[in-house]
Length: 347
Image 1: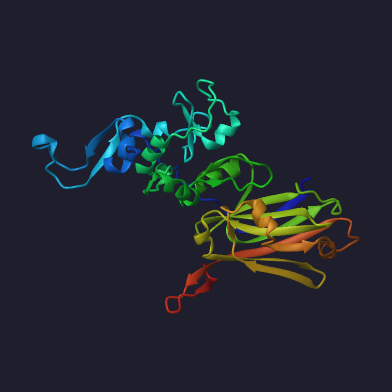
Image 2: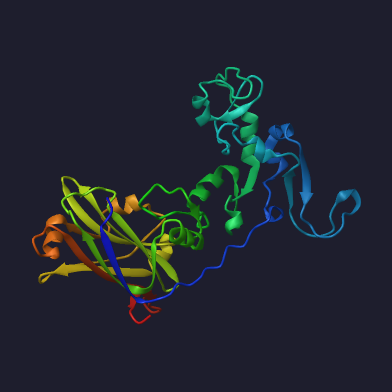
């Protein structure tokens, strides 16, 4: 159930175009490498490896380089491909299972294939591929978001944890009206929201929304709206929706920052709703879109209006919802003396 009509008044016009992200060719991508031959132990013998030097200059007698720099060992064959599960294609982590013929797969997929090797259909049993686990332990790999700018390289078993928190990982689409699976950087998501979801785009740090609903006593979780604001060179998502809280329907408005949590803390916002001599005000810090829409909503981190109060603000015979939500966004300035943030109200 969608809201019947919306009016949005923004105090400035225009949208800034965003530059497209530069393409990264495959020749620029870093390759996995082994830390040392000794750390892999005898297990490394199962994988054909060659020594590659990053020293500058020409090779001297015996193949020694004349420049300075450390040696790394790079796989001559696709060691990283050997660690890819043939079922889910994700990287495998201990315990790595194998059949009697040596075909490997991850522990998660072992139960999915009903204990049968997906390659030869032999029974898997409980055989672990300790050699491959040892080789994995010796690997150092770049973050999978290196094409998005992450320069970090991690031991194989530490890489997964980093990637779950990497600041360069793409963002999920903040559109709340459907389970949209699109991911990307902020400029891409802004264009996606505008072109694919037809979201209203506005420039300016103040807003004035009027929400009208003909039957406010019928509340479904699908009653929602999203507007994107551009100010201070950043993008913010203003959410307004109705949902059931226990036995009582409520209306909620909150702001999300299109960026990481650390950057979101640099901004504050206020929301105000009222009529008939009454007023409700909410002030807070916008949540990052790293936090899902549902997570923010279920934490009640925003302006919550009970239905009876919403109908009171609407006036009249209370048969139609008419809410006017106003607000503003401001940037906090760092106080160089105390380290505290002070509001910047003049930007």
